[in-house]
Image (cartoon, rainbow, N blue to C red; front, side, top):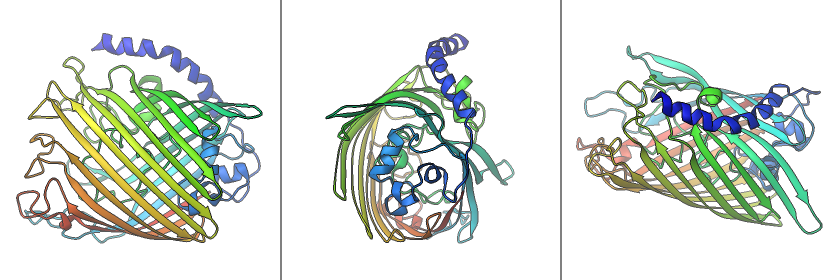
Length: 461
């Protein structure tokens, strides 16, 4: 085990040295005079709606995508700090399990959910970054059933960027170092930025239970080092390799560690490739993107005590996705729509994850459309559908041993000022873990998990 880790760390040395200068520059970032606008708005002199479609974070406008692709370097260097917090309330339709015990421990009760600190912005004309650290107030329960809070690393993305501008062409070339697959992406059809942008964290039945590994399972667990290009605002292409965020990169996975049952560290074997290509076009108030991506990742299993096992092989996940996005932005109207489909093939020769076979699949479809009027009043509707092969070990909570889940999420929201969003969201399940009725064998129906979610999302700058 020790020699395997040593080989991986030796092979990382060249990439690590290349990024040390970038991280050192980030630490030496100097502050300038403050204005009454948040990090990137202060830096560019633009309002939040210049970068976020209809003001609805985190959806980006064409200008917002251009800003990110240029490494967060447009504008003047400024104070690089900001904060964010969420207060919410969720109500599960049937909050009692088959034993009469509550499922959502805060059902119908307001709660302070989480808070984040951001360090972000321009470092030099070619280097910029975005780092988020989040405190989750109700992160997990200890052995006595008491809730524990937790500070941990959140989404992080550092970039080095240069441009080649000619008479008839415009080429952006960039390097990215980040800790969540697709967090470096600039479209909201990418898994890391896809809808819902906020949802209940306290109710265990309010979310889609099983998704492909690219959709969050590796977030704040890995270090991704890659390069990208964007040519003539038409073609985007990227190649990235992912490995375990340990050693010098452990700040990217801070809060996760081997032996921690609540937040174990996920270990990958070697470098794991990711590729992305997208075709884009902007004309007038319209913007459209069609793209595809793929991730191949090898994951070591953890033992019963949450320590990695390096001597028994890996489980391989191969995710292939297609996605698209449309935007119409012309004051006072903003219309956005996203589509994402991911097909995952799982190869598990040692049955670390699967129990009935050495191979399986898991597929996810998500569709969403929204309308915002005057950058204040918004409505969204999304559809989700997860399907996959059955397995008695991987999906033991289903009477059919199936991950199949389907439903709708309508939402209305209000943005009274650009740093505050108030929303009401309802998630309705038409299918849950393989059945339209009695999915657990104890009489619970999918609609029993329907969740009403009221939130206040505020930023302080």
